[in-house]
Image (cartoon, rainbow, N blue to C red; front, side, top):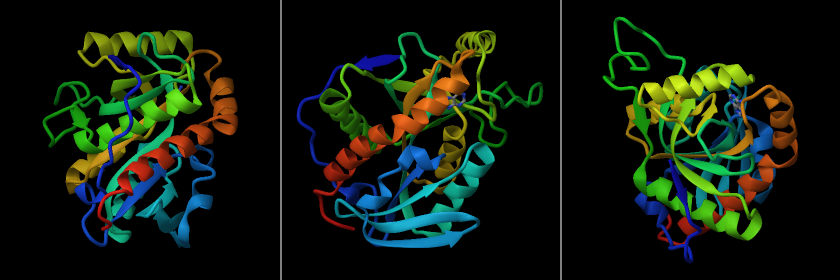
Length: 268
Ligand code: ADE
């Protein structure tokens, strides 16, 4: 686990580094509350309905974007990611949402920027090693280093200015189709992942699915998760309150800063 100090002034990142001409950056969340307010900031806004979802197209700080909500879970997340890529000319995906804390020192209100993802509930043993995704020969899917660095810097600046003393961590995030909400359950999950060599910082329900879809398409992917709960006996209450009252403030501050840094380069 890495706990990172706050950064010096943010460098500018050209969107062209992540997007080809005509492509959009997708801002994806599981829930409407996780990206509330972002849609209001879109210029040239246009809403398209497809597969029961709303896709909001426009420009954000000059960068061509599409915003949408996947709904909860890995199946919904992979369907949404594939749709973004195949129907909305998406060239890179940034996920913003909340997660339960798993790692030592990771607190409610902190932000975890993903380095890579694992599906903690995937087990095709004894045919394959536990967690290994069949046909891929690996359990973990890495995020794009450059896009994650831009996101990390946006998080560092937002936390320092808007959310001190929250801290930023960077590392492994575990995804599974289960809301983890019990002291015994979260301890068992943390210990099992640690013993198996996968010390995850946070647990959520979509990120690994999006990472796998992006890997299939060779697309840059970065993800940040604000910690809403400790995945313990009170997780469901803490989660609901955090999502309703806090999550979108983080998303607005951080995504605005990220897009501001990306929007300074040549426009795709
Ligand atoms: N997202 C936020 N909190 C979570 C938890 N405790 N388990 C799974 N996903 C989450």
